[in-house]
Image 1 (cartoon, one colour):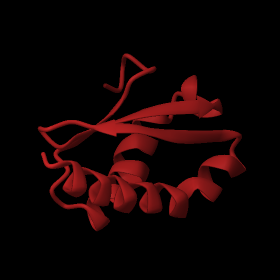
Image 2 (cartoon, rainbow, N blue to C red; image 1 turned 90 degrees about the vertical axis):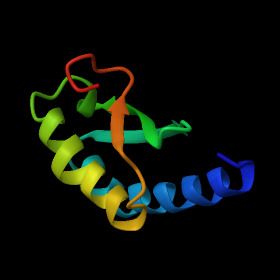
Image 3 (cartoon, rainbow, N blue to C red; image 1 turned 180 degrees about the horizontal axis):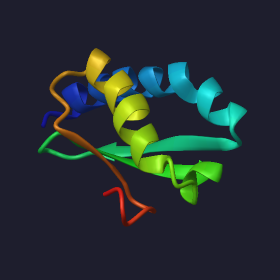
Image 4 (cartoon, helix red, strand yellow; image 1 turned 30 degrees about the horizontal axis):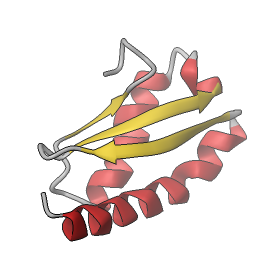
Length: 87
């Protein structure tokens, strides 16, 4: 993936995450965008309460992934690097 395209895509993804961040923070959690690879797989890190929450898989699928794919439909998947059961 070209560097310019990657930066533009990361900016869109970051904005989508910023839009849902207040909902995560309301429950004591957060998410950090780490990178996107050439296969269009986004790497994130779950923070705070999201790291150990049993609802994290649902948050990833119905919250984070849905918000990201709305602004970046080319994204194939989202993996949380610090939660083995989600990635």
